[in-house]
Length: 108
Image (cartoon, rainbow, N blue to C red):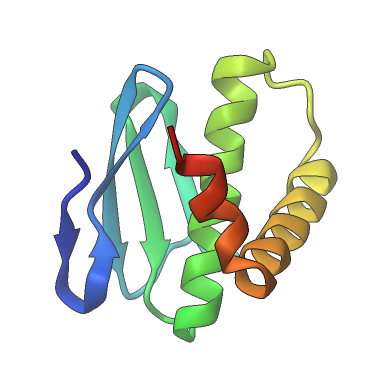
């Protein structure tokens, strides 16, 4: 079961049979020094989300990293970063604009 930490932010998520710990930190940097919204570390089952941005971007960043995880585990990492960005924006908008759809999908 997913736990929730301060401000209702989740601290773990399952992607298939893989449990990922979600860390929130003020600054995430790529190897080239660019600041990141989020990052998934497959080898450690960790998703890092930057709190240096407004909550809207943290939420969309988490969805973006989840999509990377789905792409990795279910799709042999065939989607490009551009594909992941487009899917994250589209799904984020869909979820925000149609919250009842997820409730219906979750029903048994």
